[in-house]
Length: 132
Image 1 (cartoon, rainbow, N blue to C red):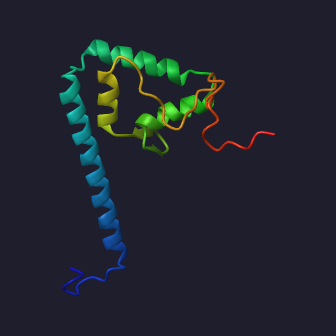
Image 2: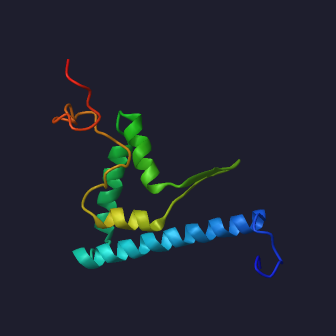
């Protein structure tokens, strides 16, 4: 449409359309990655027992004393939260839940450095200062 002169390249509708298409491409790439992973490790059928185990692990993680861990685990599965007068809706990618439920443990929460690791940089090889 831009090449035919029917739409300006700076049109907000075009930008929204391109943004939506990029999101769709990202979702498709994630799904392809999941399918490739499943193919490599073998099919792990999601049974009611696996779902129950996953729910228990997630429940325990969300009941943690550390709010940073709770937020990190929530971000793994929830993309948006919609609140109205009568209900709260959590939206996220089903693929993320399926991948986590097929494992025997929770995935590592992104952007988290566990507080129990005392010497995370033992060799002083990154951003180190000169020794005094």
